[in-house]
Image (cartoon, rainbow, N blue to C red; front, top):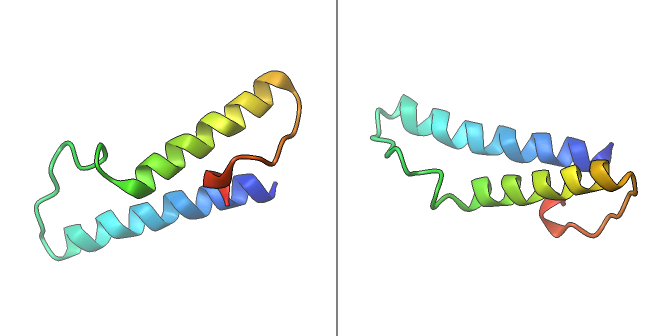
Amino acid sequence: MELLCNEFANMQQMSNQFLAQHAKANYIAPDSFDSNLQDQKILSCARGLASMATSKQFQDDEPSCH
């Protein structure tokens, strides 16, 4: 549960970054997710959580989820 909560918090943080840019009327490039470190962290954690779900074994060894 903690890892899922951390993943949600990471997604919320990235969402807040993009909302702040939008509020400032900054241009957001279509490829901005490609170079966004927060997005990479979220994707890495999601892959780790999917791997745990597939193997049905909990392994808290995915640093991107913390």
